Length: 158
Image (cartoon, rainbow, N blue to C red; front, side):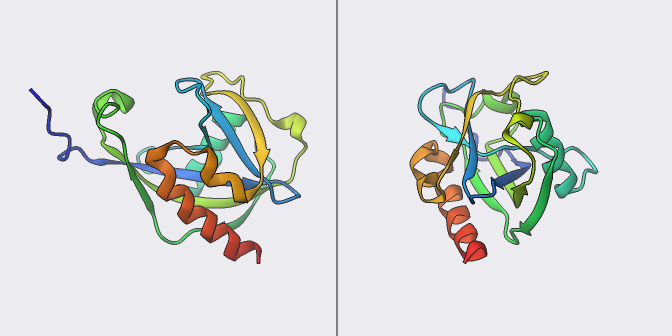
């Protein structure tokens, strides 16, 4: 019997486009999907938590990064739906996808600050990539979100 996931809500989330001094984008490889898919830092928003505070918290929890400056808050929220084989597994089956508020930030620290071996590690590896390559590294169900972000960042940087 197939379960109907369409009634599940979307998880309230945040995402961080982290740019270094050369405008390269921070991406990391997930522990639970070690194929060649990379993603930007992102995560859920706690109850009564401000989106920007959630973004800073997630960034610190996932990468240990704290020395950032906010460049831009993207107005529209971006949504993705999980593929059927992941719904019911990710987030203990409570959500069908995420509706995310994204922030573009400048990393003003040194790469030595970056540490993905955190208390609850989510990533195996990290790197800086060209903005142009952002849509080449994303898992398929996040591709539209990453296309949108690429356009937004291009506008901001020009």
